[in-house]
Amino acid sequence: MSNDQSPNSPAERDRRGAVREKAQQVKAKQTRWRIARRSLIGVGAVAVVAVGAVAVTSALSSHDPRSQALPGAAADDGFMVSSASGVADPGAQQTIDGNAATMAAGAEPTAEPTPTPTGTAAPVDIRVYVDYMSTEAREFETANADQLSKWVGDDAASLTYYPVAMLTSKSNGTKYSLRAAGAAACVATHASDRFFAYNHELLTNQPAVDSDGYSDQQLADMAQGAGVGDIAAVRTCIEDETYTGWAKAATDRAIKGLPNTNGQALTATPTVLVNGTPYVGRMDDAKEFAQFVLTVDSNAYYSTATPTPSVTATPVG
Image (cartoon, rainbow, N blue to C red; front, side):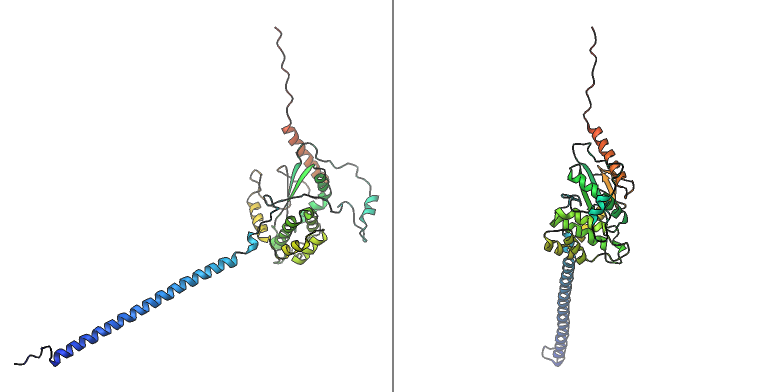
């Protein structure tokens, strides 16, 4: 009797062929899956690398050098006036031909002399936070620049200005307050002896609120007009807006709290501190401000003066 299941029978050969074909199909399917898996992993890796590259590129592109540039002349975000000369007497009215000296010479003297702080051995500390688009900051500067200059020149006061940008949104999108504060930092850094004059120019010739303000080129031209020596460095600094990032950060810090005060924060400009005490009088009244300075200075003097030793009676015995 024949055996159809013998190793060499046609039925057995067909069965083995079917098994081999099925194995080959499974193997081919597994190979395709492995290839697809490797491809997906490769695509995923490329995607991760690409995302990482985009993130780094984004970080680098957002790493604006202006946001990291710090004016070396700043102390607690303020600039101490080293030279207070070179500004026009605000009490002298300008004529059409600019001959202020003639008119000033003919002006009658005031009945009451302006008081000068002289109480303490140390100069009285005056700190002024200014926004270069603030009307009241302009009024304060116009009224007080002359006597502030005199006090600094006589070593009766130390004067520090803090440029801030609280009115950045009030210039039709040009961010004038921010750019002007950055420009002031440029002059303070590269030409500290002309900072007072430039600060005075920015305040007394400030643009109107809700106007475009001056362009960066015009701000640089004003620095040149204020007598800046190294105008090339100052112009580059202003036109590159090197310190606008710092100006924004300094404003944010001031709004959170003013240094060396008892928790006081910046809420308006100008904010004027005399030995840490806020001035709340009229910004356009030089005599009222001078009297306030004299009062604060006198209080400081009497609070630190050495008391006179008391005399103790000797008992008679």
